[in-house]
Amino acid sequence: MAGLKGFSLHALAALCGVSALGLQKPLSGSEQLPIADGASSPSSKKQLVDSDALQGTIRGDALLARAEELYEIAKLSEDEYNRPTRVIGSAGHSGTLKYIHYALTALGDYYTLSKQPFPAFSGTVRQHQLVLGDKVLFDAQPMGLTPPTRDNEPVNGDLVLVANEGCEASDYPSEVSGNIALILRGTCPFGTKSERAGRAGALAAVVYNYENESVSGTLGAPSPDHVATFGLSGGDAAPYVKKLKNGEKVEATAFMDAEVKTIRTNNIIAQTVQGDPDNCVMLGGHSDSVSEGPGVNDDGSGSLALLEIATQLTNFSVNNCVRFAWWSGEEEGLLGSNYYAENLPEEENMKIRLFMDYDMLASPNFAYQVYNATDDANPVGSEELRDLYIDWYTAHDLNYTLIEFDGRSDYDGFIRAGIPAGGIATGAEVKKTEEEEDMFGGRAGIPFDPCYHQSCDDVGNLNMTAWELNTKLVAHSVATFAKSFEGFPNRTDALDAKANKTKKGPYQGPKLIM
Ligand code: DPN
Ligand code: ZN
Image: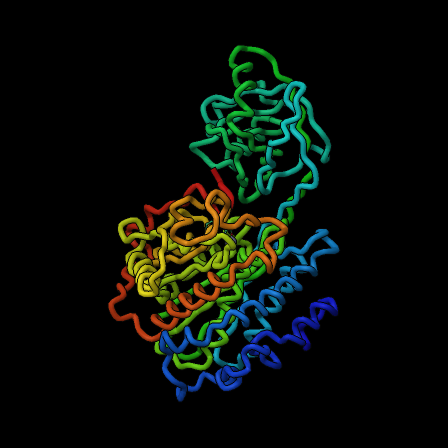
């Protein structure tokens, strides 16, 4: 077990004892599976991968055992975070990376493994408060990656309304200097507003929404000019905007005890040794969670489905290369997948025929959701992939819904790099409708995942029916393209004309950037 130093005894026992499929001894529920044979070599004597055969290897009990191990690993963070989490930079996340890497190593030489390190930002807000006039704004939210207020102490000043949407230096009146800027959401990213406010000398900034909804946003990559920044709902901001417009004064106190650290983390990539290396099917899930919880559904469900399929695939031979990715820093703004896609040399980019994203496959109040990635708005091939999922659900007499392909997960960098992409999901914070209750069961009026980004995203949060079924669909997607790309559009250009049009959307992962 060299290489697993740094684990608590408990987690080490979980890792070595249960020994995730492909480690020392198979899980109790999977003893019949010919794991050892598959794991030993990339030999072409194996049966050519076939969708039904690969799907047939997927078992809920094996997935569940992995989820239990993952939760144990998330507990490694308890000392530092007071709860299980697999946020980047935590012991729970480095344990997750070791777990994935170790499980893949145990598959022998079927895969070529690599780690892709990259710098990532990790923000913590210990305490925060915004007071306007004599009112504490309890619903004011710190923006992701916000810096602290000066010396991590409260700052005071007048609240100063910024013109337009605060995207231009000229929108900031001179009174902003030494005071607190109030800026309307829209047109440019939150990070730009914070930077402009900082350059104008503001002590802090408040970005208010045009709707009566709070803004759960992030400033994105830190800038030395960023100032402590809050998001506020349109409703909460309205009385103050009115006062300021009437020329009345509003006193403000802002307090942000926060820290932004740059850390190094890494993606893990596993590529089959066998198969045409110039024609790869690529798929990914994210290895990290948010700091609030262990992320067993988000995205333990996707990343463990991939690990299980990577394990079972070793029983087969493939015609095309299969490349699995476990992205890091998804929750901080798709950092790992963007880094990967942006740093692909053109020749390497062209080898990736498509990318399939698997993020949240087992939401407790699930819907079977397919990203509506059409060819007219995305690199050609995205729609063919979308239809593969639709056809599979249809063939299994299952309902599905089409959901927006809006940049909330790791497919975004691929689309912008001209690579066709798509995926499936089971829903996050959005509430299920009556119609969806009729289609999928569960309960209307409550979120698909009521534990989304919370400490209760634990093993009990998984819907095993959805997870097992969706993992079979993931296996189907892998087997289909590992066997053949017949009928699937060829790549034309690394920067497909359409990809250029596909700019970064309002989302950068789970958080809004503008
Ligand atoms: N999986 C969510 C996350 O990583 O936070 C993002 C997401 C939410 C993606 C809803 C799709 C739909
Ligand atoms: Zn996710």
